[in-house]
Amino acid sequence: MVGIVISDSFLLVGEWDSNLDCFSLKGVSKIDYAEPISQFIFNEASLSNTLASSLRKAQEIFSFSGKKVVVGIPDHFVEHSVLNIEQDLSHNEHMEYIRWMDYQKGRAENKSVYIFGQIYYPSQENIHICTISRALIRTLKLSIAEMGGRPSWMGPLSSMYLDGKGERESAVISRTGNKYLFLKLQNNIFDIGTIAFSGGVPRIISSTDTSEDNVFSALGFEENNEENIPIYCAQKLGRQAKNAWELSDYRSIIPFENIKLETKLNRLPFYEANILSALITNQAVNFSFNFFEDEGIIEFFFDEVYSETDHIEDENELEKNKEVIIEPRQGIEEPSEEDIEKQNEKNIEKNQKSSVSLSSYAFAVVVIVACFIGFNYLKLQNQINNNFFGFGKNFKIERSGIDKKDSQLNNNAPPLDLIKESRAISTAVIKLLTQTDLNRYNGLTITKSFLSLEYLSGTNPNIENILGLEPTSFTVEATGIDSTIFLWYYSFELPTTEEYLTEGKINKIDLMVQLDTTLTDYNLKYFEQVYTRNQIYGPLLLWVNGKADILSASAIVAKLNDDILLRKFVLFNKADRPNPKAGFYISILED
Image (cartoon, rainbow, N blue to C red; front, side):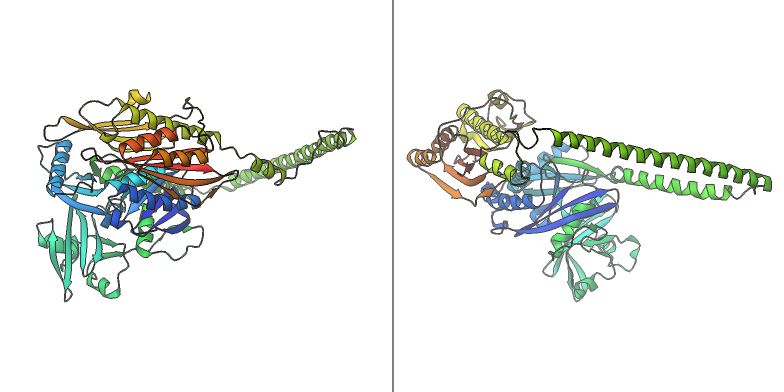
C-alpha cells in the first residue's frame, strides 16, 4: 500500500506491507512543492499544476500502478463543526440543513467545498462535520487515478487518532500559538473546542460541550482522574508545554513506533511523519470519514469496527487455554515399565523405517540428477556435431543487453496502449463539446480511461447516450430557488479496445502553425523531457481560454498524428458565470 501525506509546502510518500499487527515500511521520501498550496487551496487549476508535478515525482519513487493509495492531511485543511441530531430528521434532511448552514456563512463562489458528516453509535447525539476544499479532493483523486493508483481513503489526522487507535474515548490536541484546539470523543459524543493556559491554569475559550466540568475532567485537569481520557498530539511539544498536560493521560507519539523499517530513513518533519505513521496503523480506514467517497453522513459503531480484531484475539486466547489444559492431562497417569518398554520398541522400529526410507530417497535423488546431466550432455554433443551449428547463414550470437537494447532504441514507435488512450480521450472531447453546451460545464476531466464531469442543466443531458457508455457513477442534485435546475454528475471508464478516431495528419510543426493561426487566447507551457526505455517525450501543456478557442483547439488536437499524444484533458468553468478554461496535456515523441 502507498501512503501520501499532504502538507502546505511538501508531501511525504511511503510504501509498506502489512499483515495483522505487523507493518513493514519499505521507505519514505519528502518532495517539495514549487510553491505553498494554501494560497490557492480552492483553485483546481493551480493545485493541478503544483500537486500533479509532485505526485509524478512520487510515482517515480513508489509506483502507484494497481496499488491502493491512502492520503492523510493535517486538520488545518479541514473545518470541523458539530450539529446536534434532531431525531425526526433523516440523514438526507440533516445533510440539507448542514448545506443550508454553510450557505449562510456567505462563502465565496470560488471557494467550493465538500461536506462530510459522521455519527457515533449508539448515542447518536450529534454529527461531526468536516468541510474541505472540493478542488483539493478532486485534484488528488484524479491525479492518483491518472497514474494508475486506486484512491482508497483520504481523511484528517484527528479521525485516524479518534477512530483508528482502538480507544472508545480519546482526544486529539494541536497547538497554535499559546492555544490548543481539542477534538474529543467521549460517551460516543463528539465535541470540539479551544483551551489556553494562563499561569499554568487551563481556561476554556470555546467548546461545543456545554459542561465546563466535563471538559476539564475529560482532559485531566480535575483532581479526580477517574474520568480522564487518553490525549494524543502529533506535534513535538516542548518541555514547558508538556508540563501543562502533566496531570492528563497524555500519550506521547513517536514517528514509526512499532513499525519495521526496511531502509534507513532520512530526517523527516516530525508532525507529517506522525501523520504517515497513523496512516500505516489506522484500524478504521474502511469505516471512518473517507473524503474520496461521495458527500454524505456515515455511521461509526466502535463494536463493528473492532469486532474482527477482538475475534482474532479471542481465537489466540482460546489456543493458549487449550495448551494450558493439555499440559496437566499429560501428568495425570504415570506409565508402567512394560508400557515404557513397548513404546521404546515401537520407537526403534519407527526409526529403522525412517532411516531406510531416507536412504531410498537419497538414492532416488542421485539417480534423477545423473539422468538429467547425461541427457543434457547427449543433447549438447548432438548440437556440436550438427554441421549447421556455427556455420549456417542464419546463425547469430546475440550479445545480451547490447543487441537487444539497440533494437529497442531503433523501434521508437509509441506504445499501442498510449495511442489508444490518446484517441479515446480525443474522441470523448469531440463528442461532448460538440453535442453539449460547453458553458454549462462546471468541470470536465478525462485522463487515461477515466472521465468525470459536472453539468448544470434543467433537462437531462443524456451524456451516456452521447458517449455510448454506461456510467460507473451517476447522481443528480436540484439547485436554485425553485429547484428547476439540476447538477448532473457523471463518471465513466473509457474502454481502449473500441475503434476511435483514425490517425490524423497534423505533425509537430503543423500543430504550432495551426495553434498560432487559429487561436487567439492561449498559452503553452513546456516541461522537462521524459525518458522511457524506448522513447523520449516532450511534455507540453496547452491552456486555452474561451468557448470558441476551446472548440477550435479540440478540433486541432483530434487530427494529431500518432507522434503527438493527448494524455489528459481538463475543463474549468462556472456554469452560472461562464468563463471556460481548458488544458490539453500533450506528449510529443522526440526524434
